[in-house]
Structures are given as structure tokens and as C-alpha cells.
Image (cartoon, rainbow, N blue to C red; front, side):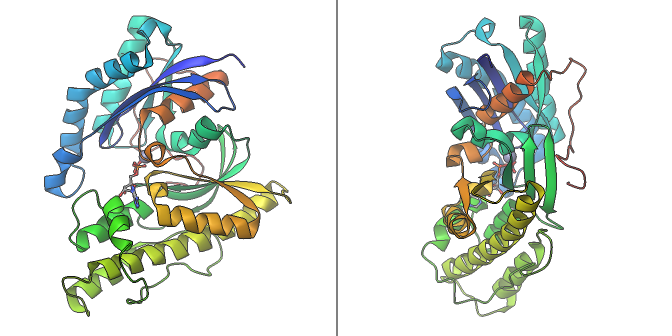
Length: 349
Ligand code: KG4
Ligand code: ZN
């Protein structure tokens, strides 16, 4: 397959990002630049992402971020083969900014446009970094999504499990807030948990042992809230509660993943070694990675987790997904709409 050079734009949440990636399927690809402008400072006073502020910040920064990504890659727009942008799912105001910018660039430079599904981009990142073959089992754990999917091809996903309430990242962020940690909570909670005793508090292990591979995290968050408000908890106990929360999330993630592993092996008649990919912002968590590695050793899976900076939102993953789409002959015309919701598989959210 011929090599393509792709510019990827990401604006679906609170990072304004652009990157240039060069390569061919199945990967690995070469990341020529990967510029991420985080809006954390703008949202921090509100304790979470404010969609209006996010959209405005994307408008203000996207041009500079694109120019930087091209400059760092040593490319002009004319050197780019394909322009890719997140078209959903995500905060619609932000998605509109990135997609409109990509449309304008594609129109001005006479380049093909690919409207990328953000979840698919997380899913395919391990092909960019490691050149993985299909099929693989995917644990997608981000701020808005928590799913287990069998990935058969870049356009074929089988849903094994999804969350029935909160996403894993959402649970991390809400629990972090309860513990008084500043936004964004996930990484800070992980840091705090390192010095805590996970045995001190007893927390529920949501969905453990249930058939299927669905997730649920809202009960866990409620249990933490009860301890903070009415339980044996005072200042100085945050690390122990953070450690207990993280241990409960890990137990639940591993139990659900094990169920999906069995279904995945069945579906694809795989007897030997198989592949598990963990993707999305929560996959940046070191304790979760270590637990998944252990699970994979036990069940004859090979674990593939992209480096942390490619697990959280970035433009390189969008560029790579665009590269995969274009390589399969899938482009979009300039009328392609932004989408707030865009499930990867039937039944998924
Ligand atoms: O994939 P992502 O950057 O954005 C979405 O598409 O949602 O994921 C962001 C989520 C946030 O909820 C954040 O708190 C969580 O990923 N996250 C973490 C860690 N790093 C990011 N959660 C737990 N531990 C981490 N180290
Ligand atoms: Zn994401």
C-alpha cells in the first residue's frame, strides 16, 4: 500500500490538537508532529469542561495549532495527501470548529477530506504505534465511553460490553472531585492512590461475576460519596479512599475484560495467542495497565497500550484513522455533518 501523509485535527473535547502522520496500513506509522493545546486552565475554575468555553477556545487556537503541526513536520499544506478531522462523537460546538477548519483547508488546497469517528481513532491508535493486525479485542476507556469491542476491520466492530451508567473516566473525575482534587481528576487520583492503602475502605466491585461484559460505575461513586459525607473519613484519608476506588475500578475492568476475552476467542475461533488493546484516556493509568498486563499473561493475550500521550486525545490518532479510511477508499464530501453521537457498533452509545 502506498504511503500517505495525513493532517489530523482533534477538537471534540478540551484539547485543540493537530498532527501530521505518514505511513501505510497496517502501520506502524511515523508521527511527524503532534501538537496538543490543552484547555485545562480555562475549565479548571469550573471543575469540568464547559462546552461554550471549549468551543470558543477551539476557534481561537485551531489555526495556530495547525500551523505549528505543519511547521514541526516540515510540511506545507501542498505536501499533505489527506485532511482528517474528528466529526464526532463529542461536544458539538468543538466538533464543528475542527471539521469546518478541515473542510476549508481541503477546499482551499484541493485535498480529500476524511470525517473521522473519534472512538475509532482511539481504537486504531495501536496500529499507528505497533502495526497490529486485525482482529483484536479493544478495551476503550475514556471520559465519555467505556466499551469492550472486537475489532475485525477498520469498519467492523462487535460490541461485547458497554457501561450502563458512567464511563470509567467520568467515574475517576467525579470521585476525584469528591476527594477535593482539582480538575482533571483522573491523573491526580492515580497519583494520590499511589500513597494510599487500598484495603482500608471496603467498596463495592460493580458487576463482578455477572454474565456479559457490561460495566457500571455509578454505584461505586455513590459509595465513595457516602464515605466522604457520613463515614469514617477525615482530612488525610484521601489517599486511602483513592486507592480503594482505583482498586475497585481495576477489579471490575479486569472481570469484564475476562468475559469479553472468552467471547472474542469464540467469535474469531482463536485458540493461540490473541491481542488486547487498551485505549482512551484512562488507559494512561499505570495501575490499570499493570493489572491488564497480568490478566493477559494469565489468558494468553498480548497487551498493547499506546504511550500515555497517545491514549489521551491527540491529533495523531485522528490522522492515522483518516489514513486507514483513505487507504480503504473512504472519503467524505464537504457536506459531511458533525455528529454529537456516533456509535461504533450497534447497541453501543
Ligand atoms: O480519551 P480522553 O482524553 O478524552 C475523551 O475522549 O473522553 O479521556 C479523558 C479521560 C478523563 O476522564 C481523564 O480523567 C481520564 O481520561 N484519565 C485518567 C488518567 N489520565 C486521563 N484516568 C485515570 N488515570 C489516569 N492516569
Ligand atoms: Zn477521547
